Length: 126
Image (cartoon, rainbow, N blue to C red; front, side):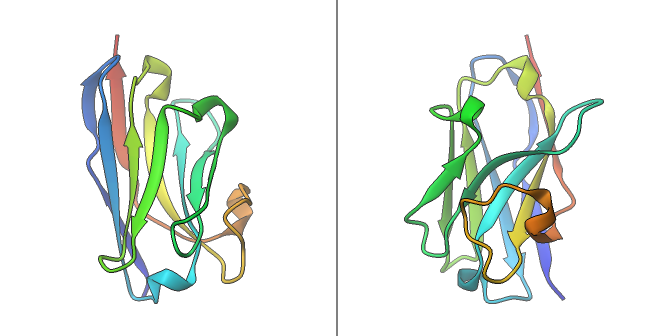
């Protein structure tokens, strides 16, 4: 079965950087757009970034452009999220997501997701 396993979360001071990884298995990874979502305390899950099949095109939440970068390595079945200039409001559980077959990277709706990872906690202290 499809598995998405995130890693790299932790406690970081505001202004610092962190990179999350998500390793996928049980699927032909390069056939799907993948994304990152996050859910902060008391908030709904929100879109962070998505990337197309080859990794050549990306889509970001407007509020995160310039600070977050999504990349993928299809040879390693892994997607990454580089986060810089972190702020306390970035504190959340970050989820890796595999879109349904055929859903393009520029879609940001959670309903487009076929599989979720278990999430990794990112806490940014002020």
